[in-house]
Amino acid sequence: MQIVKLGGSVVTVKDMPMTADHENVKRLAEEIKAAWPTPLVVIHGGGSFGHPVAKKYGIADGFTSERQVIGFTRTHQAMVALNTIIVDALLDEGIPALSVAPSAFIATYDGRMPRGDFENIGRLVVKGMLPVLYGDAVIDKSRGFSILSGDQLAVRLAVSMGANRLIFGVDVDGVYTSNPKLAPQARLIDRLSLEKLEGFVEIGKALTTDVTGGMLGKVSEARAAVEAGIEVRMVNATKPGVILKALRGEPVAGTVLTM
Ligand code: ADP
Image (tube, rainbow, N blue to C red; front, side):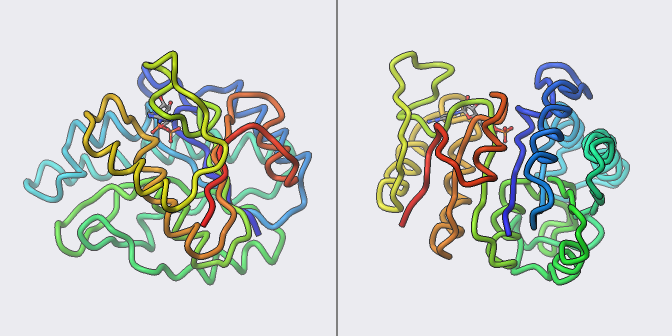
């Protein structure tokens, strides 16, 4: 059983509102097809779909005003639109992909997801389907509303379902010593132990969000999966063939998170 998280930076054009990267989506569907059939769950991020709407209505800050209610539903709907594009691309390849809406069955507590009930997702996989979930606006039991990131969801799913491998597909080759998009001297870390990971998170926290970007959140979330003995890899899903190789367990450039 494998879990693949496709980053918003991969499946969307981040600086263009509500724009999917159709080329990446089609190619990734073809790569998944090449590895198919295989027990798999796909999660995707929001990129230019979910994030701008969620931000506009302050959904991640919790429920503070009635006007956010429509914002909650619009955030979800933006994600449904992106999810439809991805599920359709998989269906076009002949993969029985099934859209699963996180907001319909998951509630967080203070932004964190409890051990989820993923039994039904397991049943779908056993029947030969490919469930496709995403980061979503969800009910939060303490704050009212929250945003469940695709990263957190992917880790929870992987741990709860006892996955062997969790692959994060992003738009860089893996975890670097600093943000490769800002620091030309950044070096790719090919193995990141839990101990080093701790140091990385600490350094990241001390820096501004601009410097750390989304990688810090991913690495912090991934800790729980590494502790559960799951093989966690960060790879570049914008480079052709990389996700296919990762799915096949073949060597590929990237970062492996280890105990
Ligand atoms: P996604 O939307 O694909 O889930 P994010 O954009 O949230 O991913 O996070 C990936 C981004 O994190 C990369 O594009 C990179 O610019 C940034 N980043 C910041 N620090 C690092 C780092 N140390 N190593 C790798 N990427 C980093």
